[in-house]
Image (cartoon, rainbow, N blue to C red; front, top):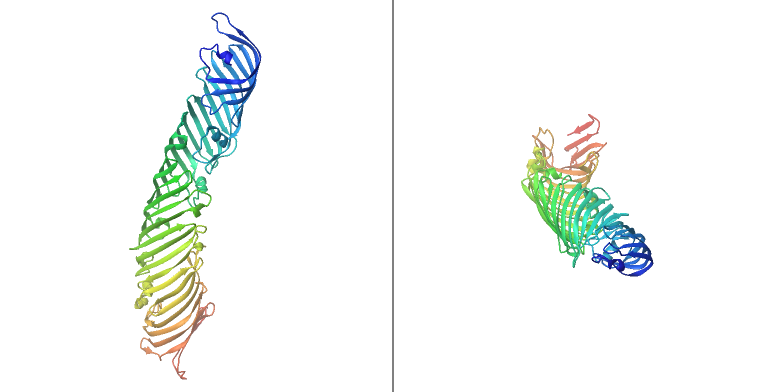
Length: 579
């Protein structure tokens, strides 16, 4: 080739500084006529230097055919770093280049090492490249078609197909087209330009169409219950490869909660701004950052005007809150997140304040409520409620079974809270205080008291099935001192009841199989004008199928002493009543 170049007006942009050539070539010089060549040659151990390549092409070998002004190359093979290739074609000294070749299978890691460029995100995959070289001698055009050969992974996202077309017009590499197909659907397309230099500069435009938000989100810990739906995005990236800057706008219009946002790239850090999610008639806004080097992220989230009825709370009201979170993008999911937040819910004429924290997979929440109007939960209730609870659990189990809690509940009207259902209860309008705990299965009533009544035991809720929510089982120890008998919720009461009572017993079973076994002691009992001896004492029992048994007797055991005896079975009209 140096011999050929000596007869050209200028040097070729592709240089052959070394190699061994053997063959027979005739050179014809006829006055001012263009020089022509005839013959064949064999090239061994050749070296090629071309602008835009990071190092010389080595181990060039192949056959060369000379005919007039055309030099043909056949069965040419060469190596660039760890990359190997084969090629062939013609070099027309008047018309220019017409070469075709193929770079054998290579990996992303090999390309990164060859060009000394570190990708801003982890990348893996195997590719082939089809290469053509055309154009005039002084300005060759190198076109490369890049084709993936297996699954390509960018960060954690798998792609079933990735292809691109590059056109090298030194000193620029035009990215004529780019297409990536995620394994779960959708596509990313784009184009751009890379300008060689120190450092090289990249300008890239990308568009994402119907990207699989759910599948990609699950890779980064998105809960199964949350649906993103297809995601659309547009991005512009520019700058040195190792210090890229850019902006991305995205939207997920058909998810569980429609969302949109903006992401900015600078200093190898992604910054999330203007992120808005439509949730339950309100909005959740967020901002944060992700450092690409160590994959650490942080964010601030603010919720405004979320409607409780649209969140399934069964009561009208709104929630506002704010939280700060941080973590690492890895396979540990929620366990790598730590954060804290506060929220305030305005409902039922009162407020519920919550302060929560999360660290190393453990979460706690302190909840305090004040002045909640019970009528907002049911028209058959009255008075107000307040309470404070501490809840805790792990991110490994976010169901009710994984929650533990303890706290105190206060009802301002006590038993009279249900006075709209049983007007007699208005006579015992005294606050009810209860210390409660939740162990993942049952509500533990450590103590509850009001108007001389006391209770402790367990209440097992019914959380699934057609009858849910409800009560699956009760196991309560009940006792009372000086309870006002006028407050007994006797339906359709036509005779006034007076007096006080002491009692103790155990209430056990489901609502359909409830049983009570205890004793009662009545003092000053009077039914209208009929007064009884005092006290009357005896057992009180109820169960299915045994029905009700009440046998209260005067304690002095006079032969003709006062007695109240009631016995009934579940069968109709099976009632014995003795006074």
